[in-house]
Amino acid sequence: MAATLDHFQIIGQEATINAWHSLIQSGRFGHAHILSGQSGVGKDALAIYIAASLNCPDASPGACGVCPSCTRILNLEHPLLHLIHALPRRSASQTDPLAGIKDSEMKDITAELSKKAAWPYYRLQIEGANDIRISSIRQLRKDIYLANDPGAIRVVIIFEAHRLNIEAANALLKILEEPPANTVFLLTTEYADRLPDTIRSRCAMHHVPDLGWQLIRDNLVEKKGLDPLQAEVCSRMASGDLTTAYRYAEDDNSVWLERIRATLNSLATNDYASVHKQVQVLCDKELENDDSRQHYLSLLILLFRDVAVASQNPETTLWATQIQQINKLFPECNSSAAVHTIEQTKDALRRKVHLQLALTALFFDLRKHLRGIS
Figure 1 (cartoon, rainbow, N blue to C red):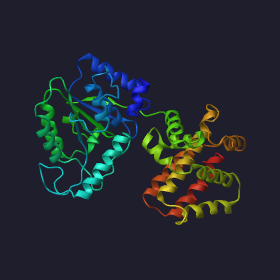
Figure 2: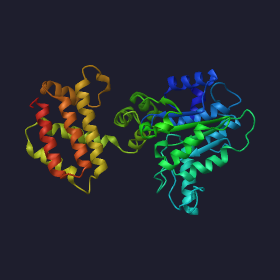
Figure 3: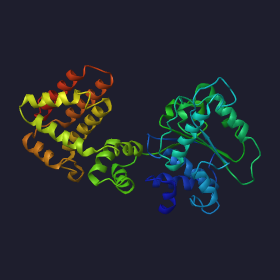
Figure 4: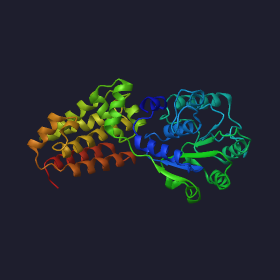
């Protein structure tokens, strides 16, 4: 099983996959399913695996990953596989989703789908693709009601189904009410509650759970060549999202760890000048931007969460020496209040408040929380 799943690049989700296997074997598979869960947990990868499982001649109830059918599905090129995703709005056509799209844009779309085929956790980044329009569903309707090979199962995967606009959702509903034979619909989404109730009522719901940070860490070590400490930083900041962890892995987190240690040393003293220096660095437009500041604050949150759990899980701490020092010097440290304050600051910076004032207030509040002062 593990070797088979390697072809589909799925990590974790063994319980979810076993549940799908049981469902396929039961003979009560149904024609429409919603796979919901946060970004980066493998919903799209699972949908591709399910499509392959339904058509693989060499494995049951799963997919072998190497037969011609599996290979074509993995490449997103199988004639039985229909992909629906957001596209740029280039014309008012109600029947042709590609109407008005230039050749250069079509090349970009093809390139994005190639990236998706190479790594199913990849998020499609198609410029101007904000919603799934009715033309895509009408084109689908033309295609799926054509004659099909006996015994073959046509699979429709709708990536980010919450992007269906109202017209497209209503058109899809009509198909789900009278689905063609031997056709299965798989809708993946982070926001199942944004789908119309009428769509959800006609689909079986499947929650895809978050990935454990240890699992993501090990994957980063194996696939990206990160050292375990760097991989732990990325995986824990990603909060169960493999795609985000890979993006974090592109940065040198050792620099950030040193920054956090310097901040902690400043907070632990009564030297207000050093705090001012930390603020000035974070406000320097040549050194920092909005994303880097958010990254820094996310690491600060991890630090104070580690302070809270260090006694129970010392092996998961990234700053063992510093945390031991905090617990020794500041036994009254209010870690939960510190985390809350940092989260408020992250939100405030997103709303473009005065940067220097917000960061100065943050550091002075963190001084108080270290000392247990309310």
